Amino acid sequence: MAVDPRHNSRKLLEGPDRVVARAMMKAVGFTDESLAKPQIGIAHCWIGTMPCNWNHRELAACAAEGVRAAGGTPIEVNTIAINDGITTGTEGMKTSLVSREIIADSIELVARGHMFDGLLTIAGCDKTIPAMAMVLGRLNIPGVMLYGGSIASGHTVGQGGMFCGRNLTIQDIYEAACRKASQRRRDPALSCYATEFRKCNHRRAGDGRIHECRPSPSGDGQRFRHPAFDRRL
Image (cartoon, rainbow, N blue to C red; front, side, top):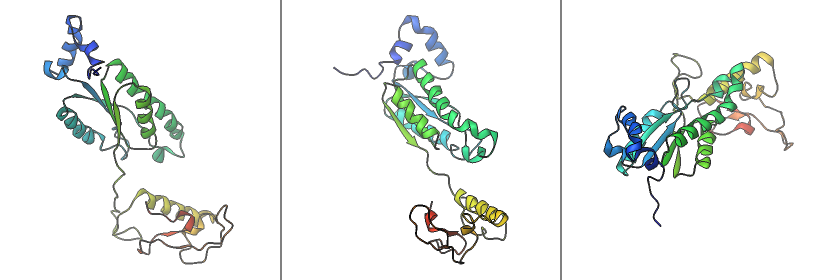
């Protein structure tokens, strides 16, 4: 038995008793032709508070073109996001984990309420990714999740200093903050970032071996890591 690609939206939009629903959809640009196709939700977390999800509206527009090319009608849905990289260390950090449930709940509500025939989700951080996966697990409709990609590197606007003249990631900022903190607090666990070529006799947790601080594989002479953290991001 063939599956009806409009098994949900047909109940919402077809028939004389659904004329009000069609009229309201036409008020925002839909047509009889577009309403007669499978209604595919495109859910994302664009928000103006962070770089992680900044490209979601642009990606959603590309996804919408693909949905139209495949014979469906795309319907964009936007929800919230919280960046724990920004909020950590403040009262705001308590909202990060909660946001995962709110993201999942909000998209699920729209998909069920507007009876989508399929759902494409776009995620970009460690709360939106599981939230969008949770949505697809809750709904009995075809779906796919897309990752929006990592944050692009940036650069310093200054004319001098260790960060001048090279690309930077948020990892560089964390390392700089750790270096500053180690100089201020003289914390042995953090001082590995500040000792540069001096021998570091701190033991790596669990393996009992002695390690040395050494320059990163980039060869830029600027970043120094304990081997326990020796990885490029």
